[in-house]
Amino acid sequence: MCDNCFNIEISNFDSEAQFLEFDKKLTFKLGNGKSIRANDQGKSHKSVYFDTYKCKESETLWCLSTPDHAWRGFFLPYDRCIDHIDSLKKSDRLKGIIGIAILIIIITLITIKLL
Image 1 (cartoon, rainbow, N blue to C red):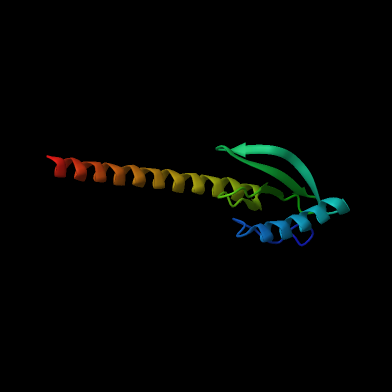
Image 2: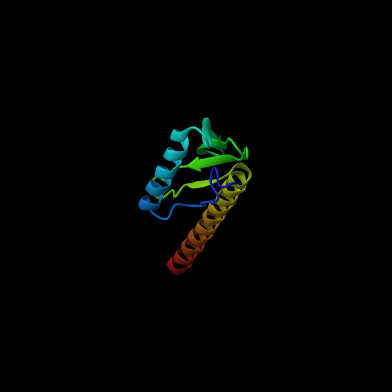
């Protein structure tokens, strides 16, 4: 990371306003042609799609996943992007397992009461 491209990491955009402000900065940096360039559009990891951008000075590869409804998106260096996606997927899987366990408990309790 460097001041030429971005010196912040965003693990999720808290609001549309925050994303729009970030998008203005990214568009400016892309438009001036001196600091950052589009690298590869439409990459994915575990069904999470993102675009990559590369800093011309530090060679840092950045990943941008735009927010969409409940998906809050992110803007992170590539290695952190992959770790972040893996972490989100693990969390989703755990929530699913907990949900199924609760459903089984409820069904068991209802079945016991009906007997």
